[in-house]
Length: 128
Image (tube, rainbow, N blue to C red; front, side, top):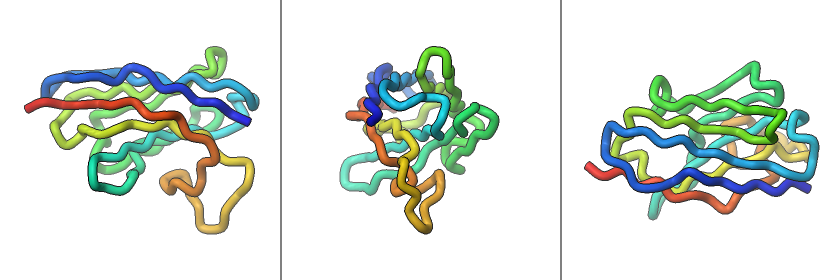
């Protein structure tokens, strides 16, 4: 079992920065991929970024590429999302997710079905 706890959300003006953290416990952190998703009111949860188990590969949604950076520190059991040049459309609840033990056919790092563990979410609000 894996427990994930996000922190670092808040209110920021457009053009500003925030860094989200997600602390993991339970299963060996360095054994699974991690991702960040977000969900705005009235919209489906969408992929933001992912990082492989050893930090060697990172992936981003086109909407955040060049502005957001995902990283992980396996010694601290923590994954980060550095968000720069924030826009009002980045406003959402941000969730971190841990790769599931059971592989579901058709799931990929950018699909929710790839992940078996989710945090409670942290609100990010970007004002214009």
